[in-house]
Amino acid sequence: MILEKRRIYSMIIKIFILIMIVILSTLIGFQYSENAKYRVKHLKGILNSIVYLQNEIFYRLTPLSEAMNLVSQKVDPPVSDLFNDIAINLNDERIYEIKQAFIEAIKTNKNEFSLEKEDFDILVEFSRSLGTTDLDGQMKIFDMAVENLKNNLKSASDKADKNIKMYRTLGLCIGLMIAIFLI
Image (cartoon, rainbow, N blue to C red; front, side):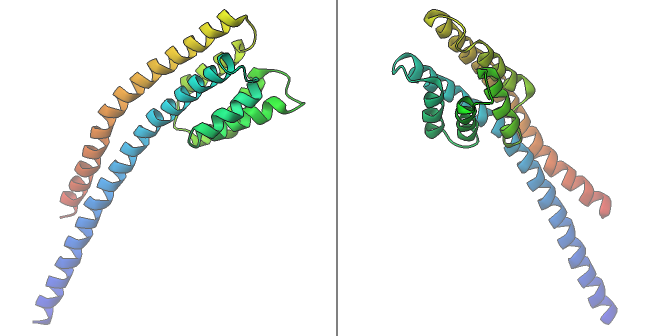
């Protein structure tokens, strides 16, 4: 009788552990799928920020550092933190170039983003050309940055759609596979 109860209890514990393994691996798969969404979210935020910046500079004739600060107030973190740091860097006497202000802000905030190197490269390239040409040239620089960000956003969105399903399914399948091996 006692052995039978022990066997039942051990079987219940084993089933509970197996269920927990499946649940945890599924949750890990869902967490990975959420991370895939963040790149899309961050790219949308940066794209909106560049458009806001373009409007501030061309239509309201706001100086660059002030425009960066205004843009940082219109978007959500971590994009707002990036543009706020750029505004601070532009007012820093030790930083002489717009590109350097962008690079320093990117270094400071890089870990807060789920972006790839090519996404940051668009910002650096944008900053390299910012303020170096006439009004028409500046408009083309903004348009090119917006177009490049839209292309990256589309590829990131396509990749996220594909990977979200894969990560979720993979998490569940790995959990089930581990549970089957432990039976």
